[in-house]
Image 1: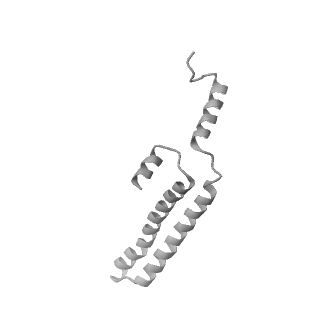
Image 2: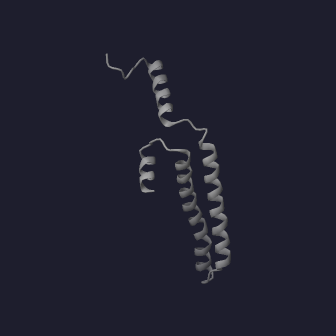
Image 3: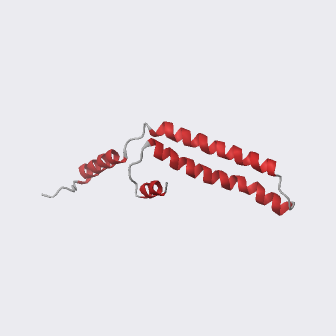
Length: 104
């Protein structure tokens, strides 16, 4: 999993499944933060926590994270590969500027 984060930081090409896994990790982290907010608020306001409400909030937030990861997985199949995108962009920049990375 940490190798996947390292590849993402280096902008290495990722498969649709890997991109969806990163989206799931991001979503679950955000869900954990959302679920923690009512717990902290209850603890500060009343001194006790309604764990049933906190559990339902966590479950709802985690469900949203899973749905967003699933949507990313389904959309990622249509995304162009990073290498092809960079080649196209490099060619377009070279054409417009007259600068080429070829030696000659």
